[in-house]
Length: 129
Image (cartoon, rainbow, N blue to C red; front, top):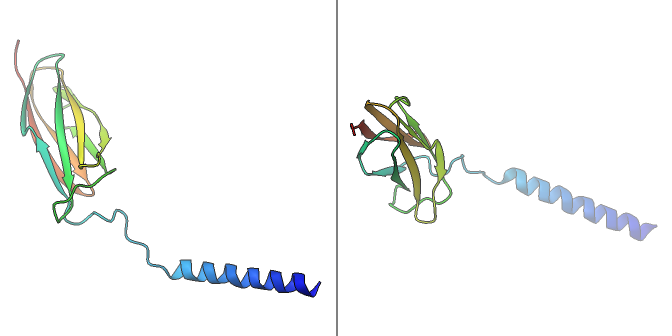
């Protein structure tokens, strides 16, 4: 019985130590890439037709210029009656994501891409047939 009590005490002390160490560890603020994110949009301006779909490439880089992998990039159209855009995408290993812009009706709009509070825009112009 004494042997079992010693095992339980050692296990309990080990568990308390692990909990203590975990509680003392500093956790980075989420997301860790928040400051200095750079968003590159290509092309900067897009001309679309009704029913057409065009690809837009967005690259997300950290403040040292390195690609950010697995980052969610959100996209919105300021006038979805003119053109719509895929709402969000994750970056690939080189920091790129691909969006689809669809032409709806005549006019002009901007597509806003955002990551961690940083934003980049592109202009979309609907052109006639």
